[in-house]
Amino acid sequence: MKKEKIGYFATTVKPNKLWEYLTFSAKINSERKTKKKLKLVVIKKKFPSFGFFIFFIKSLLSLNIFFFRKFINLRYKDCDIGFHAAAYTYGNFSVYSSELKTYFNILRSLFLAGSTIETAYDLVKKVDAIFIDHPANINGIYFTIFCNNKKIIYSNFYPRGFFCIDKRNGKNKKIKNFLDARIYPSKKKITKKTINKNKKYLNKIVSNPNKYVTWMQKTKYKVMRKSNLNFSKLKYIVYAHSFVDGPLDYGYDGFINLEEWLEFTIREIKKTNNFAIIKAHPNFYNPMFGDVAKNDARVFKKLKTRYEDEKLIFIDYPVKNFLLLQQIPKKTIIISHHGSTLLEATAMGFKSICSKSTFWHPKFNVSNQYTSISNYRNLLNSKWEDLKLFENRNKFYDLSNQTFFNKYGIQNNLFWQKFIEKESKKKLDISFQTRIGIKRHKITDHILQSSKEKIFKKLSNNIEEISI
Image: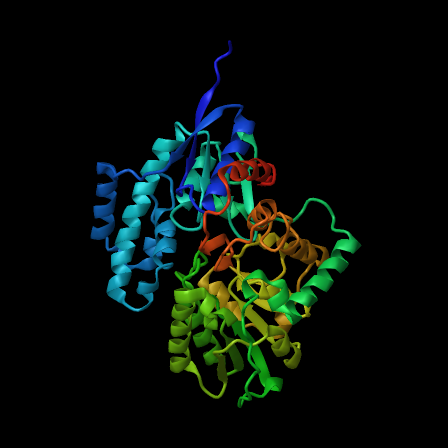
């Protein structure tokens, strides 16, 4: 009798609650791919080696932790340890209120990142496949190391849903880390039918976000208050992002976090003596988002107190973007770091400026994207005539189509949470959804184990296969 091959499947998160579905579905899928029976391994981080302590002490003595742009470029064992440690650090509420807490968290994050690197190198020799939750911070280290060692990787990350990258046998050579899982231009030409579908959908999103945007469904908007700003003289609208929810999710562009980005933007605009609106994200004032919203509102208020004047108007309450864009001149420049607002504004004919660190690849050319702080400063000081509108209509609607109509994405039927609800015939008690899926949730264990196993098998056949 032929002996069954045995291997290992690793996961960065305990397989309980909703993660149970992701973990076991990915395991079943990887068993089909490898033709092995895989044992489940829940990753426990190793204590760092003596070699890492030498690196850690050198980093302290060189004072790199006090110079953030040097810190973020630190590398250890061919990994961007500084970038991943910074991403983890600035996802912590406390660092925005205390410099001492910032330095403490940087040291803590550097230590955790070092531990993760050593754990990943040890694991990758034994493991056939891995499920990685929250790949945008320290767990992104697993992504890089498992990519470089040609393993099968499963994860969930906006704008994609639950996905798989198979690096075996030279497949997906272009994918080297989690940033390479973002959206790339399609190889096929987009059809007129798809273009028209996206035109209609973008109009629906802008005019009725509560209905068409998952994370905005319970946002309560207010009527825009009268201000002393003359819209006819408006030159910029700046859209603030959550300061703590994934500040480095899509890479590093020179700004350590989104508070630094917003404050820099405000200062540069102030120098030009032009009129501008600084608009808070509506969910800064949505109690559904708990402490994240409270912290974001606090940071935004601090910036408003510091910079608001007769030419810089801060909107610190939820306002529908559509009502705002309808009132302003077409020569207003839209500024966002990486938000989908850019797609809405582009569809309405506005020129925009954003970072290269977005959920789409810069090859789409849908905005004026900067690659460094000096490059950004030059764009902010450019005349409207010198900025480009989107260069390629097909590429723009290709991006829109992949963002909003990916069948595995958060707003569509094969998104993994919706799939579980449909198969279990139960409404999951989820407090809110975020770009990566679940941030916090409450769920009772009301689904029988036999039903769960059926769902695992079905979900294992509904995982997006990424091929770039």
